[in-house]
Image (cartoon, rainbow, N blue to C red; front, side, top):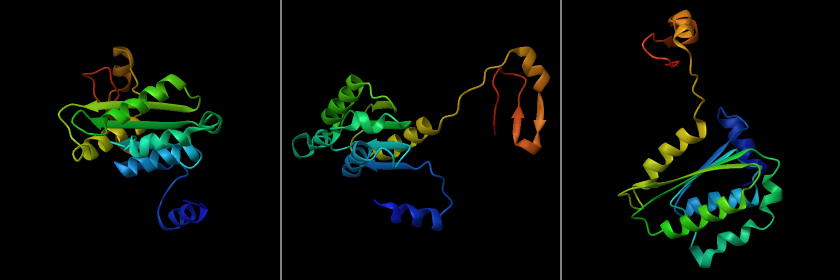
Length: 170
């Protein structure tokens, strides 16, 4: 992936500079490879059932220098695998490695899905990964604050319900 690819995307599609790369299986491996080699390209990576064990753990050879490359970024990583997936042991190694390294500039979440194999993890993992990557902070309000704000603000497409101490954005 080079600058021509990103220039094309920005020209043809409505996009921001915060790009997310999503891959499953071998494409998940490629997503992780991209993260380790060029963390400046994507603000988030979602890898479901990545083939980490491919070619005797070749992926780990590309982590050399990653700690320095990732330090100046704020990149999110979401990794998911099913408990019935043959790639589970490799993903376990990857998660243990990332956890032990405590990379500055990288926040990650990993999830193991029960009773899920290699094919099904794509839909569930990507869906949960997008939720994780783009989740907004919840705003907790007191009952008094809620009463003051209760109403329907059509201009802002926000509806505030008096029954709950939570702000609901519709």
